[in-house]
Image 1 (tube, rainbow, N blue to C red):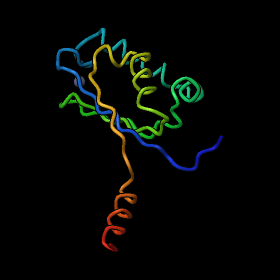
Image 2: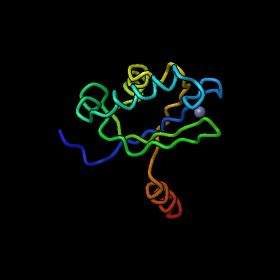
Image 3: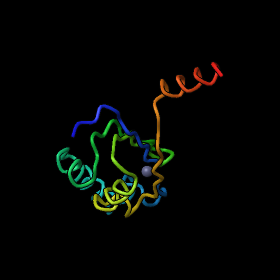
Image 4: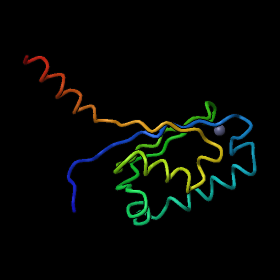
Length: 113
Ligand SMILES: [Zn+2]
């Protein structure tokens, strides 16, 4: 089944300074494993419903990150974050997102009414 519409989620994560992979060897080890465990796109799709990891951005000083993914469900993303080890030192919010273009279209529709 091929979808032509992306279903976007933002994963907004954070950890403490003490648990930062830059300061903590255990976290650093988990982070390297996270990269390995999330590298297989076929596994991500079949086991977690992740069609594509669009971007993963981190703020070193704020100890926060945002990952943008095209995925099937928040519940499967929750399992993904647990299974790859992220949940061991990061708290995370999983938020449904839409494109700016979609917001503009909805706004333009509103102006017609
Ligand atoms: Zn950090």
